[in-house]
Length: 253
Image 1 (cartoon, rainbow, N blue to C red):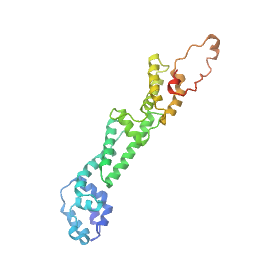
Image 2: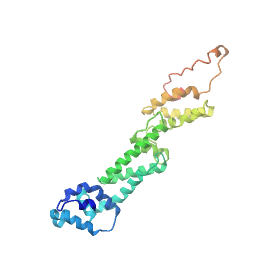
Image 3: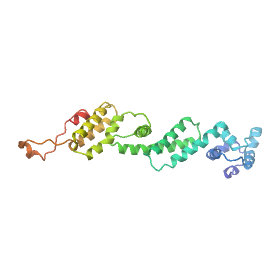
Image 4: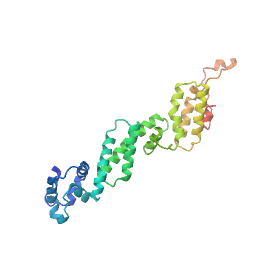
């Protein structure tokens, strides 16, 4: 109301464009009609628009934005509610946070071009950026991009289909746990080999070569050391040679 009163008489519809965020917020509040808005709209728009002068906030917003008033009334409350949820997220890698970000993504696909939509898009991009950083730490050294983050997170919580490179991500995610249990028992080693076999079917994914180098580095810790013949015991302190294997599974043989 204060911003509307600051406009000169007869300023016309163009003067309302700078008030678009405020108009959208007022529509989303779904408040009762305030006759003061009607009077101010008539003062600012009436001399230019005559009988076509909008006399409600919804109609004024529709006039400025170029979207029907009924569409704004149906869209804005839900859009701003999702925006508030995204902005209120305290953590990124939780099922609740991923659900909120997924809802925001769905809203963007269905919403007309609004200032609130642009604000939600920026908030979603920031949220997905934080999510991608968390996922990249969890799957190091395999990075997860911002564009992949939601799909990877949904699959991680069992709420979506496997993403591209799912087996590589699974092995990367579990490798630290295998390292903590090293040297590996026979069942653990077989389980790791099975993960490696599945990951080898995704050699075309960008994370596969990074995972190969990581596994090459940790291999001496993972594999049980075979006893050396007496003749070679004096060389026990020499570093073990890591084979130049071409696959993840071959490194574990």
